[in-house]
Image (cartoon, rainbow, N blue to C red):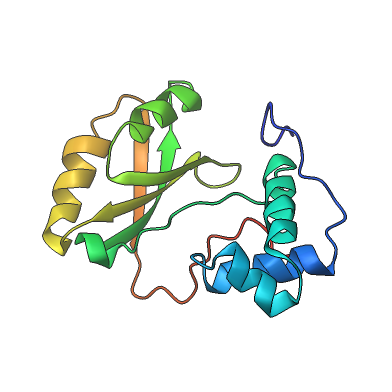
Length: 160
């Protein structure tokens, strides 16, 4: 199985300072190099150099993560999709074009595709699934599940 086609793997061998820098940024993504340096008793230029190296080696990536509710989205729907009579990748590409779909994975298992969908209100679910998702050629079954509560949502790629 090929994972992350075309990407070089992240460098191995993070030391304690690298891990401490990442821990600080996980808890406060807006921490300045000087604040990090002060907490770790190193220089701001050392922090800067290490951050640059961590990004270049793909050991970390700086991203902004928006809060769903702050943007008016109150519904999170995990949806399994079965595909028949059409290549799964073609169906996946069409689904990925829908702005309400914020995560899409091609799967092995019961469903061919797994979606995470965000919507503003409960009453939008039926219309979105029936008028947009179900009308895509090749979709034979849709299995939605509404998130009752989000217990854990972390954007870390790996627990370092």
